[in-house]
Image (cartoon, rainbow, N blue to C red; front, side, top):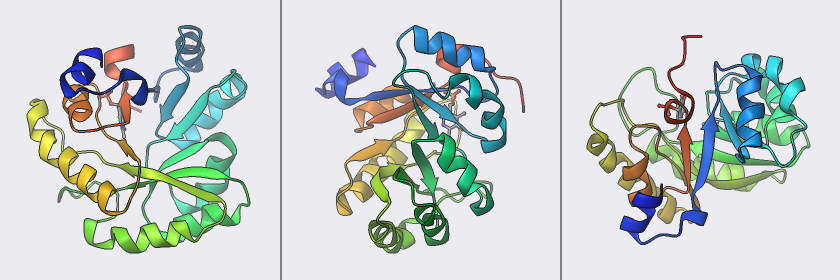
Length: 207
Ligand SMILES: *Cc1c(COP(=O)(O)O)cnc(C)c1O
C-alpha cells in the first residue's frame, strides 16, 4: 500500500484496508482487530451470522458486506453491517431504506461480460444512483467492482480506470476496488477501499 500510494503521489491515510475474513473463523477477526485493523469484509450473510455475536461489539469495528445480497436477507444484513457495498438494484435499495436504519452503501458495477457476476451495468448506473439518493436512510459512498480474475494485475487496470471515470461522472467520492493480487494497480488508479483476504490471512477453504 505504501509503495503504490507513493508511486501515485497519494496519501496512505486516504486508503482504507478492508480485511476480507470470509470463510475464516471469528477468532481471525478478533486477532486482526487486536493487530489494529478496523474494517472487515464478509461475503455471506448467513456465514457472518455465526461470527457476529463474537465480533459485533469489537471497539470501532466496521463490517462491510462485499458479497451479493438477496432482498430477502436485507433485514439481517442491515442488523450486522455498517456498509453494504453490493447494492445493484433500486428494489434492493428501497428494501434497505425501508428498514429505517441509517446505512452506508455502495453500488456494485458490472464492467465485464462474465455471467456469474452481479452488479449494475454502466448504462443503468445513473438511474440507480438517483434512486439511492432519494432514499433518506441511505448514504451513497461510491462504487465497487470486481474485474475478471487474472494472474496478471495489469489486466485489471482498464476496469479500475473505468470505475473511476463512472464515479467522477456521478460525483461519488469512494472507489472500492483492488484485492490481494491487484491492490497496487487499484491504488495507482484511485482506489479508496481495497478488499484484501489472501494477502493477510493466507489461502481460504471453499465454503
Ligand atoms: C474474496 C473477496 C475479496 C478478497 O480476495 P483476496 O484475493 O483473497 O484478497 C475481495 N473482494 C471480494 C468481493 C471478494 O469476494
